[in-house]
Length: 131
Image (cartoon, rainbow, N blue to C red):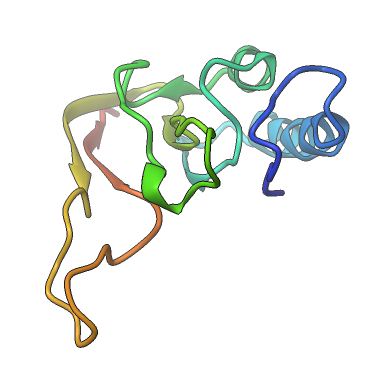
């Protein structure tokens, strides 16, 4: 669920629905012992308690180790809003994370002129699983 307020405090109107979604995903991840990669646009800031609770509850590890910059291009936000890292690649053990990089960081030639291919930056991680 998109948090169009850009606020992740516990009293925000999106907090509870996002918490419920993350808890559902946590149950899914915890219900299967297979190695897993869970990634995408979580619409939850890395600085939020939602992120912390999800990581602790799911046992997943952030492939970027907390070092990823904001993943939403600030120019697409309303005035006075701050871009946050809201996209993640999470992995289970025994995943080993090699290199990580960002995709779609700059503008590209488009028929209507230079523009971003997405409002989000893309995340890429080299992963391997030991047996």
